[in-house]
Every structure is written in C-alpha cells, then in structure tokens.
Image (cartoon, rainbow, N blue to C red; front, side, top):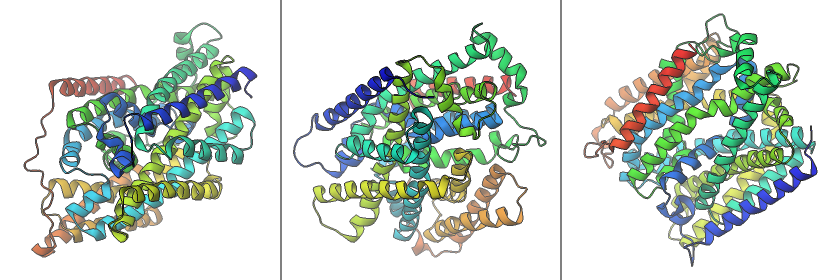
Length: 520
C-alpha cells in the first residue's frame, strides 16, 4: 500500500501548518528569556480543553494506535479494558491526587518524592523514570512509528524514524510544553475523526457495502471470541488479561501509576491555571478514553477478517489505511504521524524536566533560568538520539509492542504506586519504607517471573503491589522518628469537587458499567 500524490500534498501542508502553529503559540504572549515554568509547565496557563486533549494526545501514539490495534487483532476487545478502566482512573486522579500536587506547586514527580521523603528516594526514582522513558517509551514510539511509515509509504523504517526525530525537534525544542499542548488539540480531533472513519470503512467492507450495523453483526458472529471482555482461564490470551483481574486486580495498579504518577502524563495537569481547570481537563480526557476502543481496538478486530494473514499483528492499523480514499488517507496519515511526534515531544519534555530540575539543578546550582532551559533542550536532543540508536535492538524481535511495554513497566509500577499512595495517605511512611518498596518491586517481580511463570502478568502486578505496601509499612514502623519527613500534609487539603465534575464522574461510571454488562 502507498500514498497517492494528493496524500503527500495533504501531509506536507499539514506538517507545515503544525510547525507554524507551534512556533506562533510559543511566541505569543511571551518576550524575553524563557524561564523554567514557561518551558516545562507552559507558564501554568493551560485551559481545561487543552489539558484534556493533550493528555489523550500524549497517551495515544504509535504504541496505542498501532500496538493496541495489533492486540485487538490478536486477542480482541478485552484489550479495551486498558482504555475503559483508565477513564475511571482519571476521575480518581482528578479528585484525590491532583489537589495534593497542585497545592504543593509540584513540577515533577521526583520533586514530590524529595519533599515527602528525601533525596535518595527522589534520585533513585528519577533515574528509573529517565531509563524507562528513553529505553522503553521513546524507543517503542519511534520503532512503531518507523514501521507505520514503512507500511504506508514504503519508505525504509530507519529513514522514517529519523524523520520523526527531526519533526519532533522542529516543533517542540523551542516552545516546550505549551507548543506541544496546543498543537495536540488539532491532532486529537483528526485522530478521532480518522479512527472513527477507519472503523466505519472496515465494518462497511466486511458487510460488502451493507452498512456498519451489518458489518458489526458479521464481525461479532465470525469472531465471537474477540468480543469477550472477561477472558476465561482456557483462553489462549488469559495470561495477558486474566479474567476478573482486569476489574479488581493489577490493572488498577498499572492505571493509577500511569495516569497519576507518570511525569509525561500528569505534567499537563500540573500546568493548569488552577485545580478546577485541571479537574475539568481530567474529566474531558476520561470521556475521550471511553471512545478510544472504537478508534484503536475495533479496527484491529476488523483487520482479523479483512487481513487474516498479516505476518505481525502490529501491521493491522497501517494495512487498514488502504481502505481510505485519496486525500483523506493523507490527512489521517498526517494525524497519525503528528500524534507520534506529539508523544515523542511530550516524553522528551518530561525527560528534560526530570533531568534538569531533579538531577542537574541539584548538582549545578545558582545558574540562570535560561541556562536550565538550554540544558533541557540539550537533554531532549540527546534522549532522541539514544532512542533512535536503541529502537531496533530493543523492539525488533517483538510482535506486539504494547504487551512488551506493559511487561517491562510492570517490574516497577507496583512499587512506584505503593510509594506514592503510602506517602500521600499514610503519614507514618518514611524514606526507608519507600526505598524498601522500590527495591522490593523489581526484586519480587523478577522472582515471581522466574519461580512462578504460570502466574498471569496482571495478577503478578497486584500481588507485588500488596507486598510493596507491606514492605513500606513494616520498614517505616522500624524507622526512627527522625527518618520521617512531614513537609507535605494532606489533612488540610479540600478534596471536594464541583457539581459538574461529580456529574461527569457519575456518567462515566454508568457508561463503563453498561459496556461491561454488554460484553461480559
């Protein structure tokens, strides 16, 4: 499959327009030297609609669109649990976690850990996040993006990856988070449009022109196993999504860790004008998450009928783009590439924020704001070069990149989630307890992987999380009172929310219950 001349024209116009918008946003209402709040937190000026759109754009990238479509191709609608359960998670993050972060003027997650615990906890977790963002997130987005470009255009994957790096640098290196967040709005609109159009065309193709209702009916009848939300123990994919654990087990740990404590995600909410604006943005993002399976999972399931002989499941989404008419194909392809670039820019902005504010600034003090912004830009450049070099060696052998990402981050997510939750809601938690949980997370995850290989991934996450909570509690109670840090309190924080947020939360819950009852 390839693009036609009009598609290339549409793509070029879109790319240039995006760059122009990013530059204009970066320069608007700003003069003089750019400070760290401008560059890393968009001057704390983002409105709710920019926050919500940017949260989704940062989340929806190659590993989501291509990787989750590939998982839909291989195992079906059950993979949508990652999306639908994330909607409820976002509501909880908005109500219970954001008030703590914004009240304490947090820039980064490691900064919170230093304020709550000490520099040891901060440094260990900062180094971990830098490693994961560079060697897991950046590499996976680049690799899948390069494969998508190769599948759609025929251009070599390495050239495609290089283009993505250059495009990302072109529109984010100068403007920082503000340029990324405002251009995300356009990308989300086009991605939603493109995903829904692709679902429509796929279902209509299956129905041989009889319409999407008939197409969906044929899809469910020909692939009934692909529409089980709760997989039974005899399902070949049970190890990935073990039954009720998607509702009451380790998926909660993964989601809370990702949406609540992941720097490149939560950074958008930290850049809000105020708490109310951040919570509105979170609620907006939650409803967009409910829509995501129609955009990324359903096309993958349809591809299992339309393209049953794909060599790799991750080829499903790019292959389906052949169904689109000329011109529209170029526009959707441009939106896909822009979403990939947006995620790259989001990740590198967070990498530069953590490195500059949590590591470099502690070693090289009393420099100008411009100096630290420069270091942030150099860090962005270096991280992309490293990811470009390491992408194929790390991901070239995997069929489903989405599952690879979950497996790797699953080593550390239980400990991180335990540390933050204990630190926020149990004032007796100490630095020693936090360190025990962080080390225990990786240690017990590896032990269970080796000694209990039949334990499903998600159940392992839940079990290790409980162990980490226990370690944090036991080691904290054995610590001296001098080891405790009480610089952050939650007792005087008001967790009440506006009526509009409460209505949005209730609606999201009702929709989620209806979805699971329908596809149980």
